[in-house]
Image (cartoon, rainbow, N blue to C red):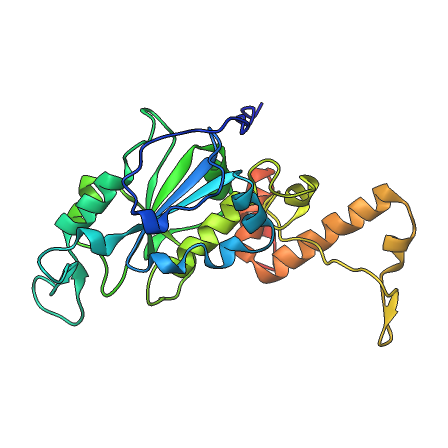
Length: 275
């Protein structure tokens, strides 16, 4: 049985090292899932996370967002946060001492023993998956480190036991867009954020499959009709059609997921000629 969701009904009061300009007047509910984001560009948050359902949930205090400006921990008059790569090479690398100071500040107020991982958004990380997102949503929060330039000094990643996560096999100019994606995918799984919890149970990856096609009105559009089965009212038949379509799309578009799906159910992926 999954753990019961934590209550989000009591306001909490706690000291904070965050600058006043990053504070907001949103309610802070005790036990609300929290994302702390270490970034050189705190002004990028909440960004798209402040819109639609995630934004409403943020305003309602169902989750909290705390950007932490990495520049505040920089060295010298100019608050330097980076230096040239050891051994030579192009670009700059975020310094271990600067990142360490920011991560130490980000730990303030995290309850002892809390399920609160520290994640570095990196193209060399393990791919972000729906099961990983579910585990994050079931925890207390997450601290995200957004890289820039050529990356982060490996020593601070090792010292803090930081998990590296990738949102795809491509390179961005920084980790902020990846942080938005990870937070959005997690927050929508928090109880009461989505109006219909069944939506998260029927979408792509919920059973290891891609989602079936969706249709709505008008029934016929430019000569293309909604499949008759979806208009039949036979819910069992509709469910079977949707399952078959999900399997078909997964087999065609994501053979890696299809293999994992078959293996989980005792099937033989090597015997499937489509793979």
